[in-house]
Image (cartoon, rainbow, N blue to C red; front, side, top):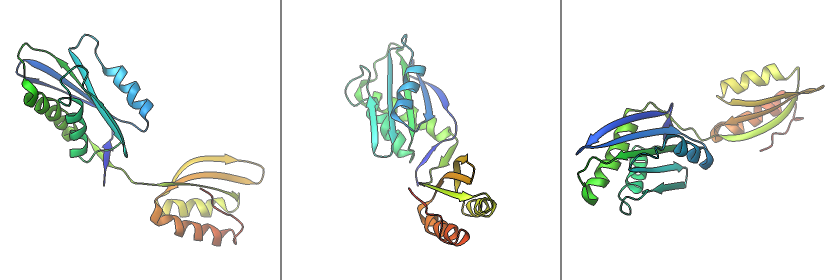
Length: 193
């Protein structure tokens, strides 16, 4: 199971007089990743290298370091810690000693990995989105079933007849929920994706 960060985290390491500042955060979209990279990057630094991963989507950038010596090792650190929906930025302040390609790979990948190892992680649970409408008198019973099945109520809209609910639930519990709601509403309510 993949994990993501509970909160943003940072870490500073010194490697052969160069200072490496790592900033990592949980994300849900590429736009959030870009905003975080812009926010934590220091224009006064020698390099701001980064990587992010959301499911099968990923990007990385070496920001002037030799090809595949910074961004790729950061991405490898994310994958090595079994993380997803994460962005990591490693900012380097050059200290006067060249590290070579192997040293850069170890420095960027290692500092990113150390940061993620210290972060508080939470397991990502895949959920599907469902929507339905029920009457007010049915809602308390359905709401209890949602809690029993560990469903997340994402949105509720109340109207004259009842409530429209958007939920997120694990795939394995969705069939049971559909059956419960059908039983409670005597087959009147249909759940849609």
